[in-house]
Image (tube, rainbow, N blue to C red):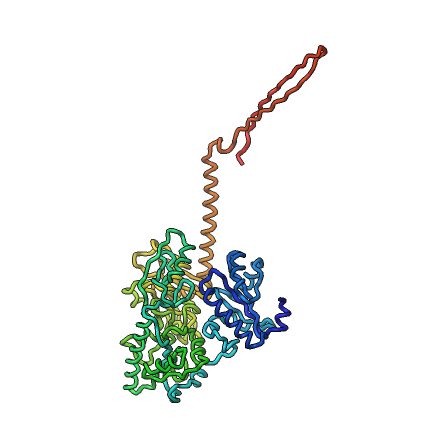
Length: 535
């Protein structure tokens, strides 16, 4: 079908970047097929056209995978065009689902896959409306009648009604699955962590045979959910006794009204009313990038500004106090949020260190963050830090134990452990949005001035220049070593290695008859020797 024909008959085009070898794609494709068939039937086949953009590794895999889809597809042979589309639509991972206006070709959303994953029936498609958090909060409908929340700080407690005991958290190997599928693994070389058994086999197939995996005990999400509920209850009761303007509101991810009723009865605070469309849950999950099958706690103030995007750890801290503000420095084993910003979307300074060293390092990083976020310029001998915008442009973490994102950083920015003193902290500036990772040299200290200079060098592009120059020099050295090896081989070679003697023998036979009729045969043999270079 031509693009002109699509534009004439459809409202939206969805470009589906996927591959048969990708576990998350295998899980999402059936959902997309169901959405396509249901939505097309409801709109008389006039709304959407889905085009499959394959990332398969060979044409046979493409044909087998595409054969199960009711979509159109870009021909597998057009690999250059696939690469161009991936770049244009900023595809950094799959599955990815770009949404376009069929008539104009305008990109409406670079990736609606996470939204459709939370909204499999497509009730809110095409996801054009983005409500503010305040608008969502102002329209909350509580199951036991309305309550005046306008002047209160709110703890949004988003919870699934039940968890299977010993069920694992999300697999980081690719499938993103929560299901209990046996033990979990981590690769001791590549630092993959919390990988399910099925993904471990997939990853192991692409690993060197010397890589080995460590088996880990199961996590217990039910226990985590209950411990957060108990901690929140303690803080909730204390706030009530002190007369603080604080309220908790539960958003239940229950799928049925009966399940929702039972879930609401298990907590003492108000619960958002059940809605078959799941609208409030969807809007909040979209706002905070949450899943429906995990427990989360978000604190917002009376003006509906976010105080703490990932408040569970703070609320569980016995010494924490109202309003439970977000930490300036987090540990990656606990959270990927610091200053309410995510490591996935914001450049971050990450210090890999021990638990005993972490407290002092956190003090230093906190002081650096305060200087960066000040409203006045702060100068050292080498750099003047300009006032920040309303949001920090660099956030701060430590890592004192293996974590998913810590493993990803180590994989993308490996460092020579032998170059560092024993137990010395390693500082990395990780810029996940641009896939940039810069390791501080072993000679760098960890004073406030050192960290500020490191950040200033990142912002100015100096770190990238130094890294590019280092990589260029390393490549030139590789070429030089390779050429030097050839030259040394030539110098040490014997003449027999440079040339070979070729002997050629030619035989000519002539026959003649004399006047008396006697037949004479003459055989002449010639031998020649030639010295030829070795090819």
